[in-house]
Length: 224
Image (cartoon, rainbow, N blue to C red; front, top):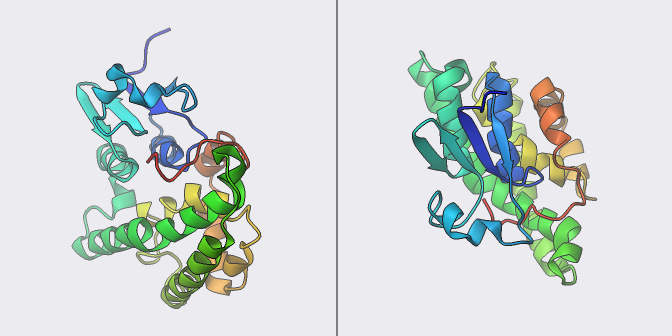
């Protein structure tokens, strides 16, 4: 069997690794997932540090090109193979994709990740849940989701009336978040709830979700 020219290094149960896999699945790219063990410290070994000097996952090898950071990987994959998901060809659409892609990365995901870590992954981190951290981030996330509700009351998707990376990049983090008792924050907002169901129902998302059963160790916010 021929070796795939595209390789992804990491553990697929991580929502960051799965974000990269989702882009590849959406683009229909054949790839090889090179398994690594967080518990064994594979990400700190010299051979991995040569790929990513920060010792994190995922890492993508695309021929001679090596990339790290899941958002950058997703954008590269779609720019190369499915640019319509970036709004390419329309400057206004592309700009709005960029805006909401950044909103996900800097406004929503850090809050959702903090909640997921405390609600789901603390047993695997060897400590008790810090409810104060949960409560603080829940209150902040409520305000962010209100902004989403306002935006999605005007358009079906975040960048407009077309599905884009701005929507898809939410999936892996929100897949974990929706398994917590705070999923009601999304369900209480009709436009956000309807929007979330779109990306979650896509075949690529369903396939990637199989890699990341909620309640399994490994999706730490320290390992993007």
